[in-house]
Length: 160
Image (cartoon, rainbow, N blue to C red; front, side, top):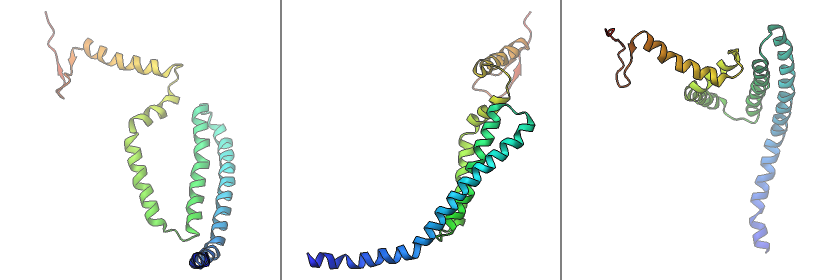
């Protein structure tokens, strides 16, 4: 039993050394995160007051108010990671690549989400469906055909 406890002595010593080395840095990082949380909510309230003068639709205003604290907390999280010694350049480069990939992947979905609040229709889904039906009907009235496998658009000769 004594041999097993002596085998744990280097582990205990290493744990104490790491706690002495990184403990204060982790406490400072937690303080930075708490400050970021508070600053984010303060910035959201300030943004809400500033957006009140623009008379935006409520969903758009809420979206902007909710994005601000996330952005501020992200900046404070980057500062908190810098304090213990995390390399930030690869992290920021990776975040840039990931956000570009996410933007390309959700391009169609986000265009509908962003365009939705500006459409002044009670039921956005019905309006989208009506627009999608009106386009082929307008093409048919003007004798314009776009066959599916072909990319060329041709006008049809008027039949007598």
